[in-house]
Length: 575
Image 1 (cartoon, one colour):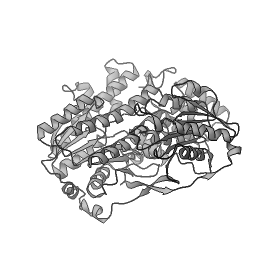
Image 2: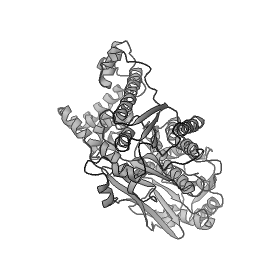
Image 3: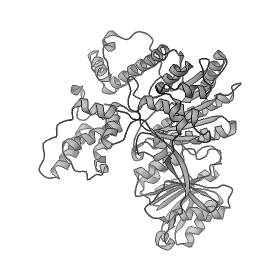
Image 4: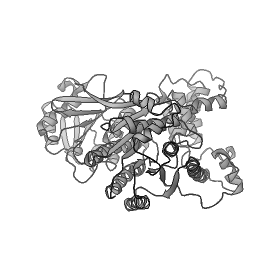
């Protein structure tokens, strides 16, 4: 409510206006006041970073006084038209990664490197050889460690090679604070390296580097996947070549195998005629369910499955296969009937107003209460929908980061039914911020919910007397392309990909990671695309996936795709 907004309240801490909402506000203000940004929305970054209403007004005053005579504010678009544009969804395209040999054009070593200073962490013999090579070209290569204070000493480039030699566990999320400090110094190069076969040390690093490249376009940011079996001298020369790479193409992730340099591109590859016919004229998915060997006796677990986009897939399973559905989520079911005044509020806006009438005055607390109420309603609505469709449904409350509790729940589900046929893992949280503003604790929280939860789930499956037919991880298109403000989310979902592929290789069970583009909000299930974010995507021309088509796409993928495709992107538009 407007009367609760004071000029000096913190937009995020006091008013719960996150960076996504602030970006929408900034874009709308620029549009209404006809502020020229010359196609570069980064000019609005200071407005997005403003922490109070007063700071926003000060920025606008300075901007308007620096331009020509002020213009009248453009009228706001009609709400109905805006909502129609924001909420419309279309069938998604299927993209799969395909590698090709992509040699790099190399610049003059003396011109590029002479007089430059580099900090090299990790890598063992590779780091030592690389320091020698840099010295031969007039550059300084100083060896260091991840937790040292050397990063602030004015280096031109940083080479994080710990992914080649680290033995005490994955680099992420613990390496993020160093990455943030390094980026704050404004280097020219940030190169990371790791070996895919090194037991998960570099899980998530490619997704992180894809986002770094988007947030720091002038920086050469690249993660290099190396062959750990190659000679250290050869690996050092390959890394030197990445420092010398010039040209317009700056891939954030490359792979070096033998003498070749590979870059993966996402290529549209359709599933073919069988998939297009399989769902039948009504698109109900019966053929796919049969192809998967699912029936009314089958049991499918959906973690993060009562809210967001996952219920759409649960609905398809319930209607097409009458499967028994086990829903797992963080949100507790409501303990009893809602307060009558709150129950009459149909959406979050009305809920906020109702909570204010009940005496709440702190905007952040109002927002938390409203969100919790809406989440509880969505859980109840999902259970009711699935029951009405003929599915047998149970709901469990769980924090997937608790490995023991996760194992115990999966064991109980298997014991209850005597089987577990499939599992969909869609847990996750978002706390979007640019890297420069990102609290390392927040990065860790987002990363751990997604990644540690997935590891706990796979560990729980490993202890069951028999294994499921399939496991699906819900990833994000942010992992495949990188996305400003989502370094943690991109890294976490990229880690899912490699974790799932390793597990699939070791068990022989298909573990598919689907990196979804944004879904259009559906009736009662908006997912992580809020109404605000939906409008922001519409403003940027990013299409949204129709929820029913998205659910059927996953069913077709499981039924008709090659099992060797363990990673796929479904998106309604480019990114």
